[in-house]
Image (cartoon, rainbow, N blue to C red; front, side, top):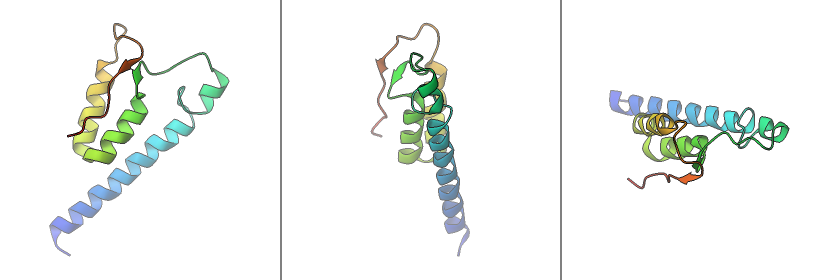
Length: 94
């Protein structure tokens, strides 16, 4: 195996680990998807549609860990008290 293939394999492993972490978050402590959402059904955690965790999962899955994390961080930083609730912010195509 050459170095390029090893790096690609490592990036794919990191991507799968990150996607699994997002999945675990969604199933456990997410107010929108997880167990805490069942305990507190009247609280919504994310102002955007799709939720921030769905968006993060989608961009990491589509673009990989570098561009995906950049887009996810940009989305999280957009979430301010002045953001309009229920804003549609789709996962970019490219």
